[in-house]
Image 1 (tube, rainbow, N blue to C red):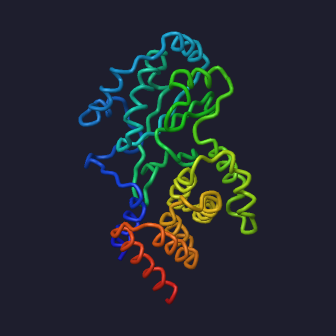
Image 2 (tube, rainbow, N blue to C red):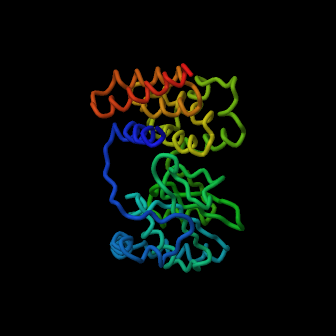
Length: 293
């Protein structure tokens, strides 16, 4: 039953946008540049590292910033296209800027049901990694800022702005607010106003996936109440485009069977993908059966 349920959930999450993933071993936990230089990872590492030409003037700025004792922690997925593009470029920038190897840490995270954005050794805990790659810039062991998934301008310009103490807002402007809510317990407050939170974050959110992607990660970190709250916010802000299948799964994980069934009904009404709908009905039947027990 458990394996069947995991298959159902996988179909539900992938039903709206289908992708293929090569059967390549995923590197997890702390890894090195030498690990990435091995096959098959060196194919994308060499391609992007060789092709990318960092701006020389910006590199000169970074060389000065490096003397301030900065360090960079890189969270990537060896399964992730964005990581394939951005990580080799960042490694080249850091090398040209004179960052020592001991000032660079690389952490591989997993993907998939139950392990999304996690490593078996837990380096991501407390870091709020919702997208990969994420580059965390620290000084004296304390985070200064981060670059999330892709640069705002260019990797070297973004890194130079952060290093110089300039004003920098990474992609996904809603995430700092969500992190604040997580740290202050707002999302787990049983009396919280979902409409109120939705209005607070409305100007910062681009689409529903920006929220449900975070909810998915939180659910597998055991923060199921917070995940369900984010799904409700996403539904209020984007009722026509929210992934009701994802929210159904998250509600069910939080023990909210009625909410899960309502979300599945919405999903079934909205999409005609036969395989996805069949999977939705199977999860629906499982939720109904658990309610009856």
